[in-house]
Length: 103
Image (cartoon, rainbow, N blue to C red; front, top):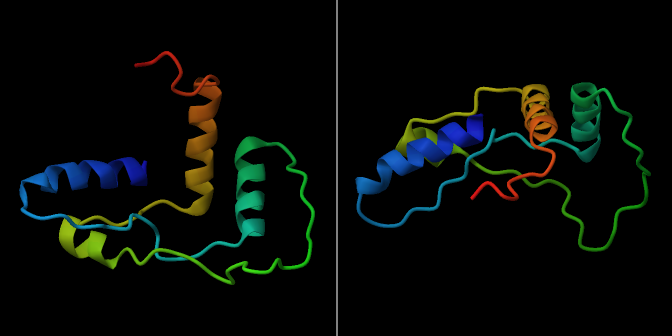
């Protein structure tokens, strides 16, 4: 829902001249394990995974600075990781075929 609201804010700002790239995110990075745990809780399913050594080229941390979204669009992510996973899982259950045949 946060992402959808951010896109709506961006569309509302199209009357401004120029082209601007805006990150829509929480400004906080999550580990893969945090995401797995949140999605397990949201889905009620165990997600199998293996912990292995870091691969060459793996980035230690990567997340978006959403400051421009706050300043330019007046938008901030309001939901927690758990809420995001629950929202995604709810959508997926209600739309098992994704967007196929919708357009």
